[in-house]
Length: 612
Image (cartoon, rainbow, N blue to C red; front, side, top):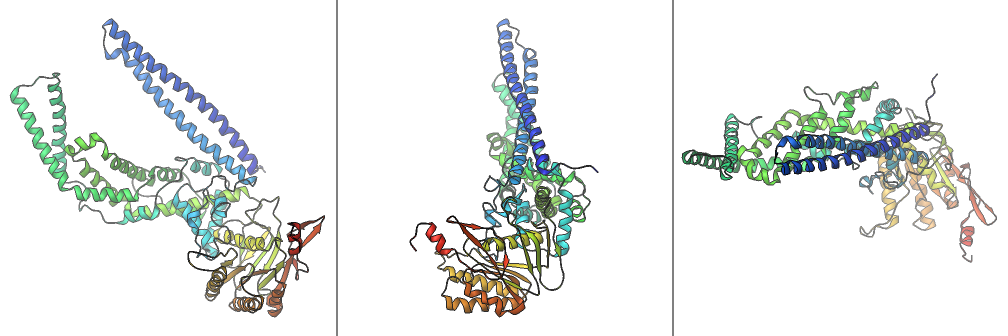
């Protein structure tokens, strides 16, 4: 059986190869740059020598000019190759940084725009922002891919959908070439395509009733083109390069004047409708070249898993492939932008360029507009799967979870936090189901209580997005998450931390009335007095459990550990411990059964020089 290299060895080998290729491309870049300068100098010397000898002829400089153009083409190829290889080098350096745990804040997309304080767990579980799960996972090159991945992290999928994604992730995990090819497309910036705006533009009715410009428009344009040629003839006469009789010159000038008047009138007549077409496209179409590149690369792939095959089929259309059609739209968008050029402003009206361009845009929308949403959705989902596949490839020891039917449950062996390197991650076993439904986690400050909540929540997010989880084994039922971990007050909204916390707890409670919920509550109600806190915390936990929810509650207030006793077999106490050695507090981050028996608060204060 053939063994495959480890991700680290694979990335290191590919990185070395790309660096060697980059050095060679740089040599070619320098060589062709110097040759182009020599070709330019040779052309100038040859032209000067021909001038001195009186043998002025274009043939004297034809060879240097041809060499200059040929070398220029090779130089552009070298520049493009260097840029592509530079992005490939960055791709593998980032991969090695992730394997070494150096990925956080290294320049990847953090997904800050997906942060939502009203979401029930995204901020609590560090899904977005610097050093977030999104930053670790994301390999999308387009906004559609990023938005799809973010949506998967913010809402659970049904088990059948998760199973289809798992198969797709397994298929794409070893396809490092595909991930690299997508990563090096376009510029270093991600695509600015606005998916919803572009899809909505494609679905709107065309502004012109006919798919093509009427015959009279083409005839008038042809006449205008002749008038444009006539302007060149008139210029040649003015420069005395060409001679025309007075009658011929008068007829030529009259024809040019009439055509300028007619074509200008038609352009003015349709200016509002053409401007509306250009404005709509300008608002919807941005940076389409990268989207065309991603489509072209995906069109070259064939997939075995059912979901990927379906997504690939969504890119197929009769006639030109989707990548070519988006490239055409990109060309049309570029022509719209070029309308400000002085030559287009002066001579465009003579050939009705605006009208023809508007018709071409509307013709594109008629033939391809309805498919744009389907293409964007397919690209977004494939890119999201590629992101999860890269994570799978780099964490081969992680497992895909099993999904259970029936009562809510969450069981995991060797559960670790996906955002922590294996060298520092401490793994624990967690079991929630019919008995117990809730774990009350006690322990001293910094002992690992909050990290445990985030570990459980983040792995539940990964599991229900279709990704592998950081565990030896994991089994869960479909669960909506609700977390109260990173709750803050809001000065602008006039909301205290306690009010923000009880608002979140109320939202989780309401969610539990309609679906199975996994709740994660850190330091429950610690913003109020101990008497009210004890009564309120027990009522909240009991209310959640009575609604069928399962979850964990942490506290450093040992009085609250009685909540587990009050729930009987539906509750259990667990704790984290610490030890004091040579004036230093040490933590092992191991979860143990029962209630913690000591606190480190005074020791921590004394270690900071406080006299307590």
